Image (tube, rainbow, N blue to C red; front, side):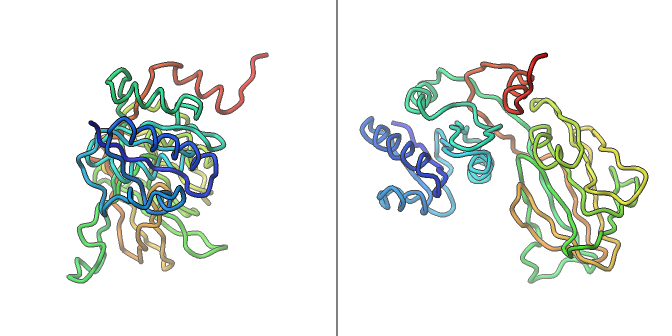
Length: 290
């Protein structure tokens, strides 16, 4: 018997329908199943609601949705080393490898150990307050981890924020911009790409620093070693918001610093080892031969 977490997009009927079929099959096969509250209620299986936080004794997590559902799945289980199998019922589905029609077959193969595991680096962020650690600061000691990116961006519409960037403790540059993205190779095709960053093969080890709408001559993205420590300090009077994979993390005031590094954990993708990265890239972005 295996323990499986099913994470579904609770607002997409196709995701819920596919998840219900999978849950019924897993239960019939004698496997233990857990789900998040919203999707369990949506398919009428409140008995499957997982405890908070998600238990670590899981053999597999199945993400049924789009890229956002995949990010949520890794947020739940990556620290415990649980592999995630992604099924695409979203639009682009860049992070998902499998389709709903093959859901039960691929889950059966994954539980039987017949599919491979691809490991990708993740990113971590902590905050250092200019005023020093406060005993009642809820962010004191907090570490946020993400698969795609950490972003520090302006809070106020119509204004830029000034951010000082240090690399391994050495001053690099001061940016006047809408924000700064630190992305993993996997995240290079997400927010970083829309801000002009390069596309990086997802199994590469590196961190990419990309300014968002910089008001300065130097507007290039930096591709750095995976073990680089990136410090981003707010030096304007306006605050900045930190977000990880689209989730709000904390607000930084003048003098506060966000420290971004490689995460201690990795994201473990279940894969059939099919198409190469450049073929997937070509397909997902609709690139045509001439």
